[in-house]
Length: 81
Image 1 (tube, rainbow, N blue to C red):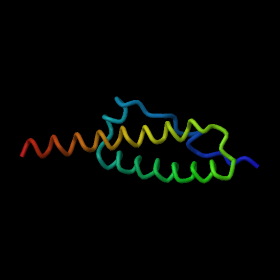
Image 2 (image 1 turned 180 degrees about the vertical axis):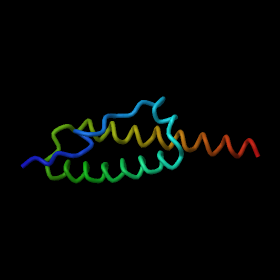
Image 3 (image 1 turned 90 degrees about the vertical axis):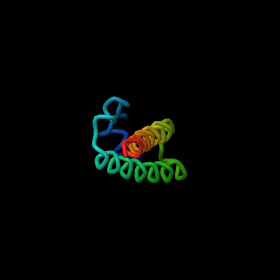
């Protein structure tokens, strides 16, 4: 039985331009969702049910993009004070 992970079939990778258009709350929610997906992907990898190991790397990079945007925004607001 193959477990289809919802990130493999529903959520394509978001581009940096699309991520920058999201609000901080949306980015935080997306990051939380991606981290949950990353956990599930690691479980699938350990059980041998993961068909595309590259999905883990794509997931990890998108989390990094989101964290970069959030960090840049927090530094910009601190600089404006």
